[in-house]
Picture 1 (cartoon, helix red, strand yellow):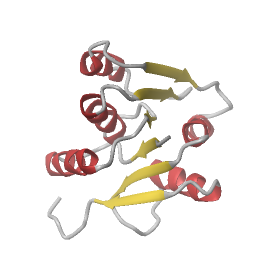
Picture 2 (tube, one colour):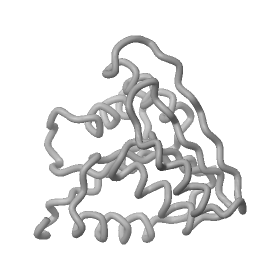
Picture 3 (cartoon, helix red, strand yellow):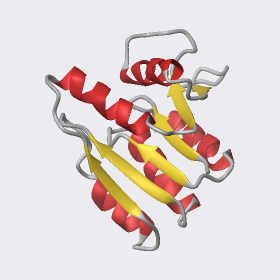
Picture 4 (spheres, helix red, strand yellow):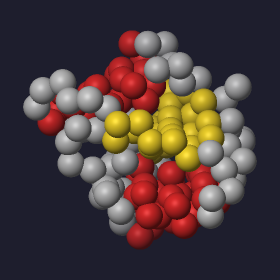
Length: 153
């Protein structure tokens, strides 16, 4: 069973959006898709996978911190009630940074891979790199998709 989690930046240019959709669509099918309800890549991955994998289980991990509240309407429309759509509300564990970490840890629990969209393959302070480091710690395979791959973004 393939349980694929996604992470990436909350702000994407139009070119990055197109490139990310192409990369997501090129992935092998998954049985379950997980995202963290953030603006940007999370919402893009959730809706792209809903169209690409209508029979997969789609899980949105809602942090006890600010998130993209419009994602639920987008997912409802994208899935058109044709597949399993689950919302996991992550309980508060403290301040926003700790709540995002808790969300990322829950999203990675039992995941078989993490698809991480990043601006650089070198660490920079961000939520996506927090998630990558959590995945590595838990021995979840990480697939990096670097926006700067010689492309103009």
